[in-house]
Image 1: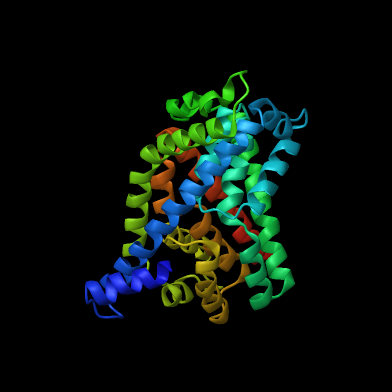
Image 2: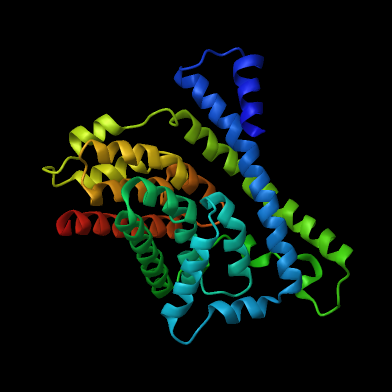
Length: 316
């Protein structure tokens, strides 16, 4: 339905010719904005409803353990099972932080959710075989866990935007029992609160992504990030960050890069940069994180992707 609407709006209402960059950018924007807003509303509402039944303390007990790695592993695994882009994962991130889940554990979820999902795994398995698919999931999980542990050790809780700690789901935090109608009302109030704060940044992020959507840098990468270039992985990550796509959307580009002879590590690094560190998603994430924590997040995850890329190029 959204595709039909975007087609009608772009090609019929605006009468823009197919094939031009500006046409594809507008089509991408018109399709993606309602999709992400719909996802955002549904996810926030579901999270809010669940939190009216599941006390914050229970969420905290589930993800907080004496052994720090356990919480990070659980959060990263949850991220794999919830295939959201960063902007859609933000409501769950806010819910974790507000519930008292340690910041490092929530970051393991935030890294894993957009970077790894079962759809991408199935597509990778079909296109490149089991080894590549399992490697992608494994290294993505490792980056998510290690990133969360590092951020936890840095104690940067004060660099989360203040409003995140102040959000409550209506009476969910209180002791009085709630009726179903009260839960719905409180959850919708929470949806409005989050949507007003995040929606403008989503629009900015999607707009930036839309204007670079038509640019698929296979030829550039194939020429300058080949096997003989020691900076190949760095170039792949630098090109991947400004792009905007989910894991499923970037797989055709990855397939083309693979066919042109790019090493596995360089190819995986490019895919991880696009899905886990894209510039439009960082703009959205800035609404939740203060600049210092956002920069730390980008640095830690970026270095992890570079290490993984060079490691697999060396081993394979």
